[in-house]
Length: 141
Length: 480
Image (cartoon, rainbow over all chains, first blue to last red; front, top):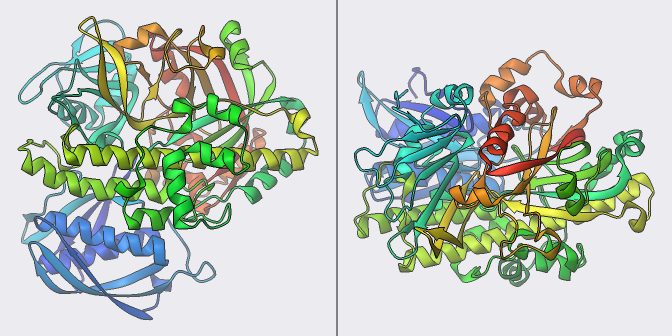
C-alpha cells in the first residue's frame, strides 16, 4: 500500500461523493473498497478473521468497479461482513477477482459511522492526473 | 459550476432553453433567491440531461426543492410518450416509492405533549429504526414476501395491520398494478425478507406533530384536520429490496441503452423503450418494489398506532386514528393527462416529486373528490411540515408538485456544524423529543441542514401547483 492519500470526500449536498486515488488500476480498486468501508465503520476496530473470494464483471472498467463495490455492499447488508482490506488478484477491463479480508459486524466492538445504500454510475470515469489514477464515485446514502 | 443560461418567464417560472441534444426545454419553478441556491450545484445540468431522453413530453421539470442527485436531479419530473418514450430506473431512484403518510387522531396535542417521553420511547421500541433495521414482524417466507410484492398494503391489512379503510386513503390503494415478483431478483428478495415494518436510516422518520395553523378550512375539514390536533407522519420506502431492484435494473438498462442506440449524457440515466422487453420488466419489478414500500408504511403505521395507544393508555376508539393520505414521491406511473388538448396516457417519472391531483380527478376517494388530494410535504425535524391540496392548475406539471425541504448542508458539513453541540438537547429545549437509531443521524439531519420548507411550499402555492392547507409543528421524532 502506498503512503499517498487513498481517497478524499468531496462536497455533495444530498449524497456522498468520494474521489479515489491509485497508482494503478489495481490499487484504485483496492482503495475504493477501503473507502467504502472506511466511511461505514471505524476500520481500526475490524480484524482480518475471514478471507472471501469476491468477483465482479462489467462492460468496461468503470462498470466493473461499480459492480465490484456493489457486491461488497450486498455482502455487508445480507451477511453483515465488514472488509478491512481487499487484495486485487486479477483485473481486466471486464472482470475483477479479489480476496477480501474482514469480520462479521459486532455492535459491541464496531462503531458504525454512516450507512451507504448503493453505489451509483453517476459520471463515473477513471482518469489519469499527475501520474496517478483517480475516479469520483457517488453513493446513495 | 456550469453557468446555465436561464430565461425568465414570470416571477416563479424559468426556462432552460433547448440546446444541443435536448428534445424539450427545461422548466424550473423558483423565485430569485431559491434560484441562487439551485445554481449553486449542477442540478440544472441534470435537468438539461433529462431533456435529452427519447419521448419526453413538454418539459423536463424542476420543482422548487430541486437539488443535485445522480442521473435525474432530486425534484425532477419527466412525462414520456408511451410509444416513443423510455423508462429509466434513474428517474425513480434507489428508494422506490419512498413516501410519506399522515395519520390523524382525535387527541389534542397539548394532552399528548405531557407524555411525550413515554410516547417516543414506545414508538422507538415498536418500530425498528437505523442501519439494517429488521425484525418488526416475524420473518417472512419467500412466498409471503412475494405476496407483498403483488398486493402491497393489502397484504398488511389482510394480516391485521390496519383496516380496509386505510387502502382507500393510499395513492393507488397501496397496490400498483403490474407488480410482478418474478421480475425481482433473489438478491432483492433476500434483502427485503426481514425488513418489512422497519423505518431504515438516513432521512426516514416517524414524527408526532401538532396541527399549528389551518389556512384552508374547507380542505382541512375534508382531510379531518383541525388546529391543535395531534397527528403522526411516517416517512419510509422500500428498504434494501427497492435499492437492489434499482441496482439490478441499472445494469440491465446500461446494456439495453447500448442495444437500442440511446445516447446517454450520464450512465445513471440509462433506460430502455417503455414497450421493450427490458422496459416492461423494469416496470413490473419497480411496481413490485413500490408495493413493498406501501406495505412497509402500512405496517409501520399500525405498529406506531399500537405504541401510541399503549403509551397514552387510551382505547383505539378514543385515539381514533385514521389514515389521511399516503403519497409516493419516488415512482414511475402510467397516468392520463391532457397532451396537446387530448387526454393521453403517459408514463410519468417523479423523482423527489409528489402527485397533486386536483378536484374531480379519477382515482381519488369520494371524501376528497371535491377538494383534490392531500399533498404531504415534510420539512426538517425542528421547524415545520405542510399539508397542501392538489389543484387543477397542477396539470401544467402533469399533476406534480414539490416533495420536501431539500438539503442545504452536505451530511459532512452538518456533522462538522454539529460538532461540540448536543442537537438532541437543543431540540429538547424547544419541546421536541428525539430518539435515533444511529448516533450520527441526528447531526446529519439537524434542522439547519435543510432549507426552510416554507420557502418551497410558498412557491408551489403561488404558482398553483398545490395550495397550503395546514402547517404542522413537530414535538416527537424517531429518526433512523
